Length: 131
Image 1: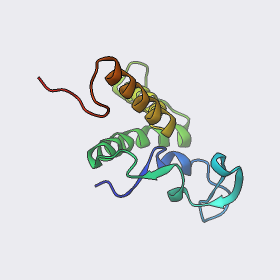
Image 2: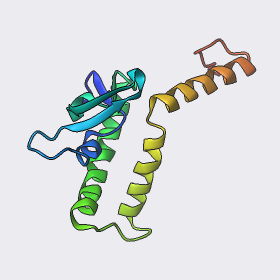
Image 3: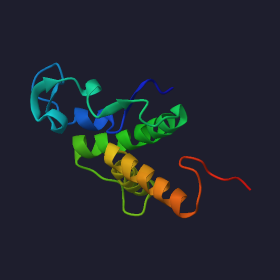
């Protein structure tokens, strides 16, 4: 079940970049305040509170991440990828494409597009007409 802290970069991906040592920290350069964090927790990166707005979206991503994690872990550990055109191959492609749309920039662009579309079809901002 989705919590308040919703990650737009899955934690399992970030963990693949952990620093040497047992604490599994990562180094981060935070663009928002031009600050380098030499050791920080994965759980505190690449998230916003209630980013998706609806818990079901985060839960759906979590299910896909679980399946993708198995394939990505095998790729990192063994250097193997799913066979071309296999269900695993399609899952990884879908996962990669969805990651591109799972950012603040993408969310803001989608919101802007929806607002402009609503203006063009004479709908009040944020409201969709029902027939």
